Length: 172
Image 1 (cartoon, one colour):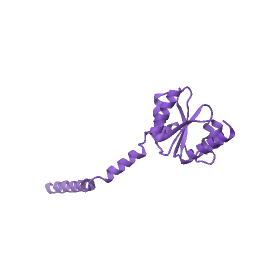
Image 2 (cartoon, helix red, strand yellow; image 1 turned 30 degrees about the vertical axis):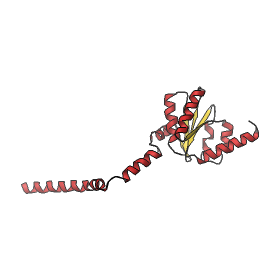
Image 3 (spheres, one colour; image 1 turned 120 degrees about the horizontal axis):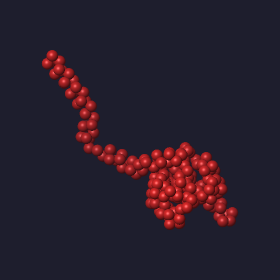
Image 4 (cartoon, helix red, strand yellow; image 1 turned 45 degrees about the vertical axis):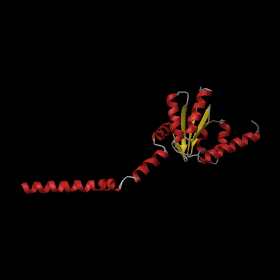
């Protein structure tokens, strides 16, 4: 790779990281080309990207982004997963790391906040943005009678308690 290619690569990665909501850093020691291709296909299907990176060039690309503080993680055979959806890259990376021990998640960052391995795993358990939107739409489209029933339930319970107290007082 000559100087101009390196400069283009750094610029391209810098732009990609600038648009990302989440970056996951991992070591990929021992992954075969077929395994790496499978992981990339899964990432792409989820709207994320997975790249094997050159550490020195990646440190240069990180400069000026929210992920600048990740530069210390780039030692050894390193790859990054990133996505606009704050859950997609973490979900696929953690899922793949469970199935294939050769992929070791080192940590990452979401919007400038450091995440360790446990943070990435916790993020992976959250529902995706599309799933959350679907849940919200489901709640909004609930019939008004159901909403009224939910709102009336506490009042009905209070009324039953008062009635029981009144019946108890009458009996005494």
